[in-house]
Length: 300
Image (cartoon, rainbow, N blue to C red; front, side):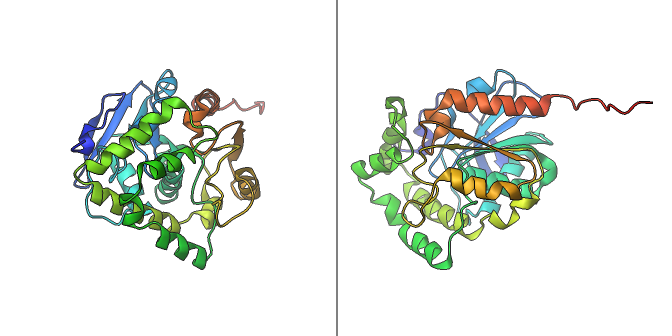
């Protein structure tokens, strides 16, 4: 593979000019308030392939490659959460979308929360799938993670290491997820791969530098949180004990309009591994946002 543009996508993509960057996106279905899918660390549009069609039956769905990822440009940039949030809002501007339902996975959920905090008028509702940013890290823990994820961490990963890192995203990695491993292995030969390795480093630092834990109380829009019950990545398995469910249940009282769904037999990529249950939960939640508010029962 000579270029990230050679990646095979199961859906047609277009590009938008956003703050001087070309952002790749797919746009299917129809609806007044679109669903915007924001992938996580090391992600790209194909990771949503089991969700886009199901959600597009009733809504317009836009899936993007964040800057630095997939077929989008990989400029020299901070790759902070605020940088990504501005890129998401910039794409909404480019597509003339005033408000959207943001569906973020992992780092993408943390980015989506930043959009909601920095531009709340643009966010109709939030779906946070296996969200990063809620878990907290001490200064020493954050320093350890920064030192671990260097460009070499990505650049020199062997095929067996790449496979193992992908398998960690699942309860049981399904065979149809093999394209993720194959793509990642092939990208080692692509131009811009070194730049991509730096994107990963800065993205991890961005997550650590801009958590949202202290601001959860400010997320007033309807919010759905989903986790697989066998998530092996959140909480961090090296640094923290406990389960994702325990992490969310501890924070739910601070989120004024949030609910939580735990998906059985699913890991960190629950939207892929438990796609039917995930799609059903998200579709029901989005349908509630479309429903008209009940009429007042106050008599005249």
